[in-house]
Length: 274
Image 1: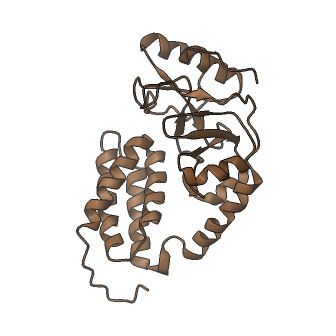
Image 2: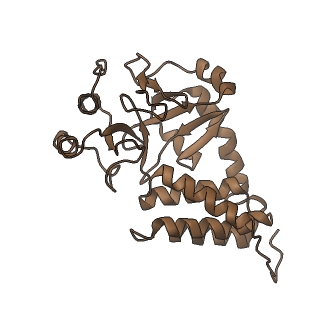
Image 3: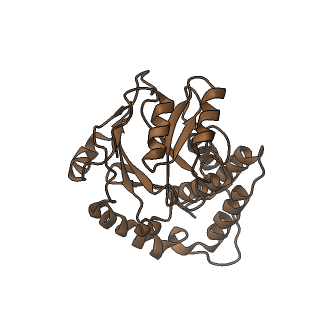
């Protein structure tokens, strides 16, 4: 692909579109995409022009997942710098939090079973079928009030083999423990039920529904029937499918889970759930 324009969100969005990416308009001064079904299909030139004409200071992001065809490896942990150095250089940028690199989606990533995964100090933002996920890219201004900057590489490389191997271990662990550790049938049923409720929540009720689900499952986390990481992964995927933004999801998940953990549920079960 050709180098990105030196300035301007609209020129960058049109460049990304020509380069085969899915450019997503971002609300000014936020990380939230404009609209609801923004990740369901590739935007058109006309749609991008309409958005930028109707709103000033719009930012830009890149959609992630199997349909857009790319994923984002984000590293903001100094301990993961060595991991980043071991990966092939690919189209990416720097932000206030750290470094980002885009790689091509691989069908083998489906084994991850979640839209966002942490491996070796890196955050793998994978997306997934029906899950809307975006990473804000240059020249959008970051939390440090500076524009994100491209890394000067203008090729999107295949997903690194080293990361695929790293994904195999957590995938095998999930197969042994799925859907929850210890095989607690009560918690497994609760997780499936709450995830379905979040996934099918109506517009206008989704955030409250997610908060309630996180609280209910947090009560089970508190008594050891299910681990927090499993709950977070399942509810994150469900909320993304429902159409909530990632930033809103993470804040609501944290709040609901911590409230539930602070109020453990007392269970009287008639059968052994171990």
